[in-house]
Image (cartoon, rainbow, N blue to C red; front, side):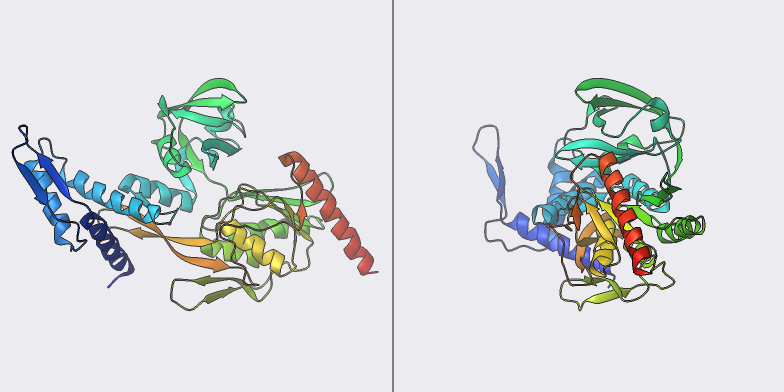
Length: 393
């Protein structure tokens, strides 16, 4: 039996148990007739779902379509898993699943922003260069309050992204709170080539790499950029992982391997299964001085990288405490092209730290605005370089 089939059966069973705990009934207009289905014994099997489905289709005044009923049941089961403690459990409709796949491949049609849920507010944490968002003047720190006139409300960042994306050439209207000022933008969507990173040399001659995500190819792109920076004379690298919410687990291992030559990068454990270790891939830039910039938006695969570099004493971590997402989700495709996302395991740093809920504490805390954090990172990296030169005589 395939993994997704086992998971679906388990979810269905959980939903049945939950349904069995309730009594269903209604009374007719005169109150003289009542129909009850089930009892409070909790005993039930999958036939209950079929029974409820059949009664809705045959008795409801305006029954939903078969597709709507099935989707509603699956969404309800995913919500039950979320309510039971899996904060990342989510059902993707076929359209939402296609959107998710686009992000991991690095190309989609949209406006070109990175979003983050900060305390219930949907904030733009980065605007991708040369995109419609930059062209109309959207800025880091803008808070999205409405999409096409509809209040964002309780939408999470994934759901908001799905609404902002759309067919190339179509328009989306965003209502923005900019420091208390209400502004609006009408933006025409374009095909966006999503960069994993940007890289340059600072005025001080240091290498600077801002890693936005961990879609396919992130590790190889970083390796190429670090090679070019060091060949051009950069004596050290700042790896900026601020507001990087993660991505593909495998790319997290590849990114860490750019700087770690050998040994464990991360270990991973599923429920009762034995722990599995993932080692560095070799051919690393192991002697290049390195500073890693982090903040509360550094999560998931970014924390895999940060934890590995910190535990192996390969880098100095600068900034503020990271998010603390030390769990691994798997997206399980379903038969109708929709998908289900579930937490299936936890990961650990090389020293065995489980960071879920606690995050990673930086070696040097710099709780300041982004520009000040970056300047402080440059100062620290310059100090490391001077120290290394002195140690070499």
